Length: 397
Image 1: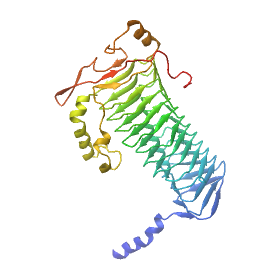
Image 2: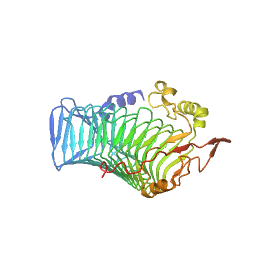
Image 3: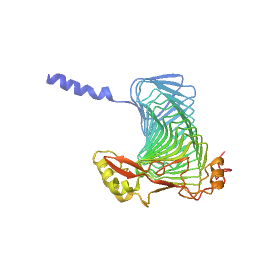
Image 4: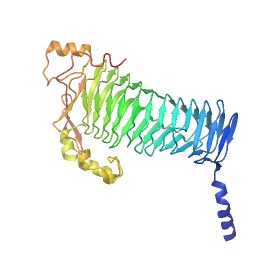
């Protein structure tokens, strides 16, 4: 028995070792990859236009990979892994499908442009402070998420399309992309998810259309959400569990709910335009009194149970960083334009700041909610003063 064990150990490295490229290698035509492949630091893999690469194993790149107009496909293959690669690693106008993770980027600055990533579990994952460029690419029908940005990645993500993802179009987790602009999120369960303390990116000039939730902000994330369009989503923006974004100069049109605020979230909602949304701002389980009495204890319980109110390592995020400020029982939505019909109503009736507006659902509609047998007052929305003309005309198309 000992002989067979030694024999197994002797041969084990040869079973898992990768073929190595340490010089220049060029591919064209059809290429089959059935064993792991590693492009070493001094190596260069150049893939000609029109090449079809069929894989059952992954490719790890530490050196350079350059591919234009190529196709990478397989059935549940591991994907491409780019480790600390420079801008001299690029994929342009390539199609990647059938992978566990189409492209995993660990650090570095690879250039990913004009790609199609479809039918993968994850399209692209950016990690380890990567400064990658992800531009003008199509993410379609990936079963979990199109683009996953994490580990303090500082990527530039612009002019991409995210459609029909299984769960999320894109997910920003404990990261702050340098640029996140000009992207289109259409027909996803959640277009864009931003989660955890430290995720404070600028989200600008994006389109969210026909999603169940356009943008969801969770667990103490505080992005700046500006100059975006939210059109025909079930919920345009959903704020959840102590999330305080700045929401300014956006346009909300024909969403069932434009902005949904819940569980101790206190955004600043200013200079936005709302048109034809049955409900413009909705509060649910949102109470300053609950936050004062139970907020800190609830967050501590979630940390202990790995529930993730901690956005950095758990011992580095303090309750003071997560704590809500200015708990006066209101959510700030002053100086917004509520649409032509609503503005005429506001002007003609000269309504007081305490008026119960039909397009806002708050403590004037449901004074209390119950939790664990106790009642808590639902916050109210501060809407006065209001804008008397649109703010985004000339700013958004």
